[in-house]
Image 1 (tube, rainbow, N blue to C red):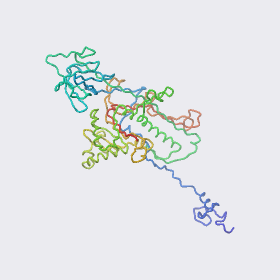
Image 2: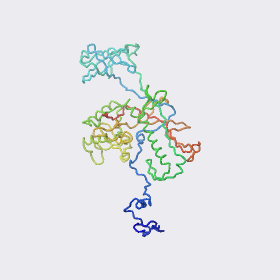
Image 3: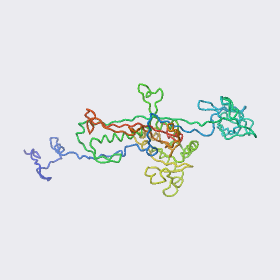
Image 4: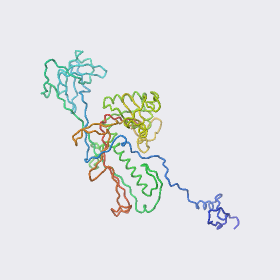
Length: 494
């Protein structure tokens, strides 16, 4: 058959891998009639059996392991009490200057406990101040009449003042009887210590992975390097491994993003019956401090110092940790760079490193990704928080040069160490990390992280289902104690 190259049927396979004129197949000049197409069909594509980690480490958990602890509990609710302030002070008092009457805004949780003969400081919004001694105090209306030490009356102050007690003055030979009147003070008002009670409830978190019996019989090996540190070849349980990793992330994300179901909300409707749980962000927004637009400020150092001044009025915890997204972390770097270069090799802001919460080990702090600096009397340890940077969670890619994405949360400041609270169950003061997780557990069932198999495949024989079900369950909640010492960094979304 002249004119046909190669001749049909002229290709003879060789018993060895040799280049012979009888087993050579041309791949150029194909016409679609079996020439180049035949060559393409002779060979299988080259397949890489190892997965490419194009997103790096995809897990987000680990934040709570750095800053808190996990402790078991047996009840449906955890209750704790936090101490209130020690000294007597009132904000937003009305000043009637001509009569030197200071009216305390009485409310359900605000009572007048100022006694006659106590000395007070009066401050207005303009910075004016006056010291006076109390000559009468009405416990019902909140009217406190004072006698200024350096003026005839209180007309020199603004209409709204702050008043706090700094001592007392009594005449010689005077007595100090207990107050016996329910309306006015005829003696000393005894102040009972008060506390504020908080509570949170655990939620049940569940997930499941299902693989049919037929799929388990179709073996397909994949070489993987998982985020939990393991590696090697996985069969169909590759997907189970990722389901477990995803569930472990949910354990942390649920208590960070959690919200209590408000009265009248759709979640709390009896038809749905969800109660929710108070997460980290919700607790700080309700009981803590919020700093808006730190990245957008002109003088970041001045704004940061304002945060420190506010911390002075709270617990003044010396060591704090900053978990930030990329924009805010760079904002802090710019702030520190603008103040001056570090003093000495290996030192941080202000000259000299401090790694107290990491057993003063610089290696330990750096291995966890923290970088420390000191401002005023406070030590800060700064690190990026992947949860705020990951594009699949709150780290949405910026749409343009002026927006940060859909997330309004830029970072969080968390105090290190422990707090002392009163445990209602134990009846004693206990020390707990400011941030810790409580999970349901008893002698018979530990619900911290449960996993079990059901079905009739993979070693489980619990039902007639031709599949293997891998079940995951946890029941937990987060306790944010001393939230007044936390700071949430946010921005206004345009």
